[in-house]
Amino acid sequence: MIGGLATAPANSPHLRKAGSRTAVSDLGGELGNGVEEGPMYSVAAGELKIGSMPISTTAIMPSPILLWRFKVLLFFIWGFICCKFGWDSVMRMSVDLRDLFLYEAFLYYNPLLLVTMMVWLWGINLWVFSQANVNYAKIFDLDQNHLTYREIWKCATWMTIIVPTSMTAYLYLYSHGEVSLAASQPVLLYAAVAMVLIFPFDIFYLSSRFYLLRTLWRIVFPLQAISFSDFFLADIMTSMSKVFSDLERSVCRMVHRQVATIAWFEADSVCGSHSVAIPIVLVLPYLFRLFQCLRQYKDTGERNTLLNALKYSTAVPVIFLSALKYHVFPEKWISFYRPLWLLSSVLNSLYSFYWDVTRDWDLSCFTRIFKFSKPSTISSLLHGRKWVYVWVIGSNLILRCTWTYKLSAHLRHNYLTLFTITALEMLRRFQWAFFRVENEWNKMNSKSGIQLSTIEIGNEEDKLLSSSDHSV
Image (tube, rainbow, N blue to C red; front, top):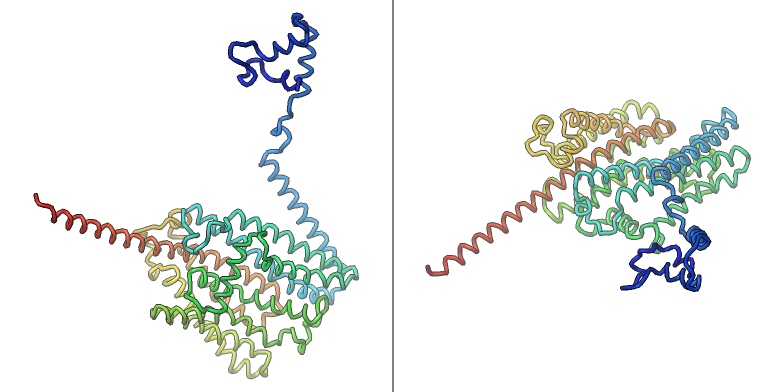
């Protein structure tokens, strides 16, 4: 108590009474029994003041920039360690088994790596929408607790750390003879992801997880009216059909205890390349989107929904004709089925490209490339130049054709090629999202403008009618 009084300033309003001396002076008189303050008291008061002075928290806490740089340094150190251990583990294996083992390891971790990439890209989408003042929460019917782009990036950061760490542990343990421990790594990772998604307690963004699961349920069972978020996520799922196919094969191997083996190379393996489950899983996202279009036609009666359903139906022959490669004689495949597959691939690619440009993006047959009469917020912020539209349209056409070619069955073992094509499809869907949300936002603004003008006209008519009732 004495130290606290001695450390306070002499002219502090909290220690002063009206018409009285300062508290420190009164204290000094009491301590010295009325004796005048001398040099000894000044030294003692100074010691008390220094001893009781609180340490500034700003001197202890590092600056945000320094903390961010420290996190980045730790991230690069972690990445170097994972690459070092992973490379050394692969080099320990024999040349004959190395490629087979890398394919197996890639099969387990490829789906989650691509999902992580998509989460990063979605965070960039949300950041651009927020910078352009596009109310994406209204478009997707999100509640006030929806995830922002910062929270999306935080989730992506943890996924970026956890998935490669598990993959490194898998490579290291397998190369050092710990096969059972290596086999447990992807199993634990998939179980942890499933638990996080369905965890019923209010942690890990419960409302957002529930929103995602509810939307997935509505996609699988379109028993209600289709919302924008329903078919937007379903469109993204069509770009991730290969991810779902690899996910099915990984889970199948885990169920049949084939992890950390090369049983996938056997033609009669239940989870091998000849499995009929592969084309079924590949086609499911397109069927979900097809049923959504039929449900929209039932609710609205618009013919465009039937044309959109026809677009998704063109992906079905591409997938199943490609799968016949493993179930027919090679001569039959080359002479009959492959030409049909090529024809259906070209039809699906061109139809999907046309729909992207004219319907999803509403570019009105390329006229907006050369004429910007009413530029939108995202156009003026992100891509208000002609060359960007030329790039987006050209790359969309090329990647549409590439994505259809990826569905070919003979590419199943070329895992690096498949990963590259799938990643490029993610980028195509990433840039597609900007124009699709922009188009929806423009439609919502135009509808609200029409409603507002209708209300104003109605108010003016009411005023005229009310004024005519009065006698002048």
